[in-house]
Image (tube, rainbow, N blue to C red; front, side):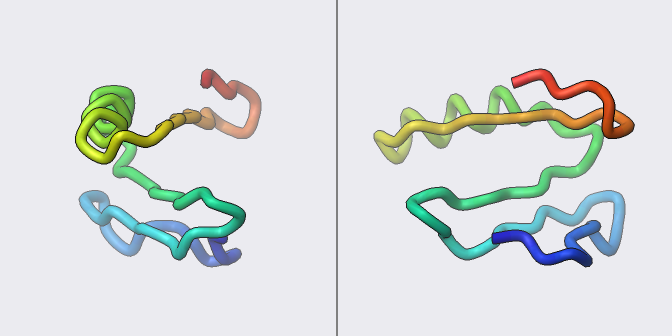
Length: 62
């Protein structure tokens, strides 16, 4: 589960957190196309991958 100080240290850092309740959380750089990465991981690992983008705390596309 992500910790409170989960902000990436650099603009290019990817943070991967230990699995919790069967889910692994990944924080991608803001410019990253996470949908393509989720699709790739889902196919490569034969698992369900989900992505959520949070914009300014107000907008949450899933």
